[in-house]
Length: 262
Image 1 (tube, rainbow, N blue to C red):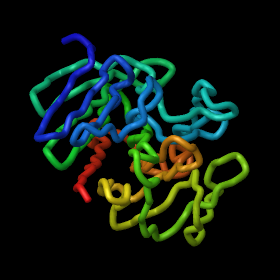
Image 2 (cartoon, helix red, strand yellow; image 1 turned 30 degrees about the horizontal axis):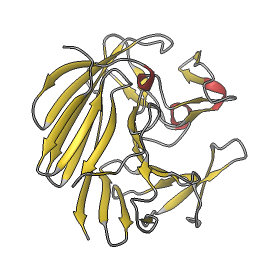
Image 3 (cartoon, one colour; image 1 turned 180 degrees about the vertical axis):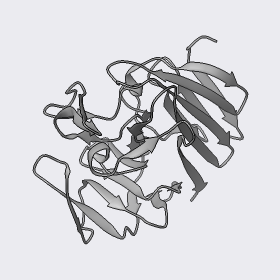
Image 4 (cartoon, rainbow, N blue to C red; image 1 turned 45 degrees about the vertical axis):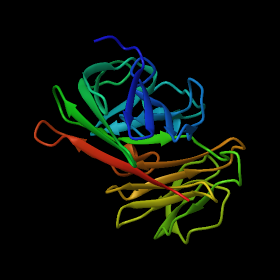
C-alpha cells in the first residue's frame, strides 16, 4: 500500500495518519476542532526504539558501545522511526496498522508495528517492537503536541505523579527521584499505577491520556503546545533501565486518549 496520508473517522472524530512522515498522527479533530499542533514535525509521533534523549548518543549493550547521530546536540533524541516512512499493513474506516523496519543507524534488525484505533470518544495507539535476530535494548512511547489553546482559555494539566526524575543541567535524569515540582516542565515523572494525565480546556474539552506504562514526560515550555508523552522508561533509559527485546518477548506499549465535551 502507498504511504499517503490516511483519514480515519468515528462519530464526529477524525484522525489523519501520516505513514510517510514517521508514522505520526498528523491530526486529531473532535467536532471539527483540531487538537494537535500542525506541521511536519508536530502532531503525535512514535518514539522508538528509544524515548527522549540518549546521553551523548551513546549506549551500551553488554560490552559493545553504540553511537547514535546527535540530532539534539550533544545528545540523540526520540528514536529513528519518526524520520522514516512506515508501511501500511491494513486500513479501515476507523483503524490502521503500520509497520516500520528498523534500519541503520540503529544497529539491530527489528520491526515496529503500530495499531491506530479510533472510536467516537477515544483514540488508542498500540506499538510493538520485535527483533529479527539478536536481542536488543529498546524503548517505545508517543510524543503528542496538543494545542495549548483551542480558542478559549489555555489548557490545564492535572496529574498526581509519585515522583519526578531530578533533571540535570544536560536535561537528563540524574538518577535521583525527587518530590514533584510545579511547572513549567521538561521533565519525566513516575506513575507506578499507570500514566493518568488530564488535559482540560475550560468550557470546551477534557482529554485524558492513559497508559499501563509508568513513565510520562511532560513538556509545556513552548507557547503554542503542551506535550504529554507516555513511554516505557525514562530518558536515557537505554543506559539506566534497559528493556530487552528478545525473540520470545517483544516490547509492547499502549496509550488511550479519551475525551468528553464540557
